[in-house]
Image (cartoon, rainbow, N blue to C red):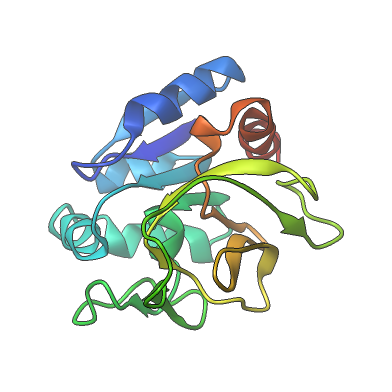
Length: 194
């Protein structure tokens, strides 16, 4: 069973619709016990990094999520959910991320139109399990993750940033697969079928 983490915000309904479209079994969960039983985990995210991290802490989900990822459970972070994988974010510098990937999520520089909203093309490293090179996907974000060793796809918007990460059982996408049409469905299906 795939656990979709409900921390009190986020685009849960559209993620559920995408999982329905690919025939996946899932449950929307808020309890640590349910996360411990999950075969895969999805952390969708929209909104503010600080609000998400505080909510995960209050619901006692932060520690169990990190433990399950370290134990090898496949994890997919979407947008803000991917940001959680890094050390932190300029959006809430007082709060730490999961620290599973190096670096700090930063706001697009002055002069860049934010939020970065709309369709952009991916530049994908060979061997990606989730995304296809040249695919156009839908973005909606004001903060970006740095390019790191785990980066499997990048995108250019005033600068080059991480559009997807893949490292063992850990996956994340900056774009919204649930809003990216057939190619987004393909990304979610690839995660479900891992």
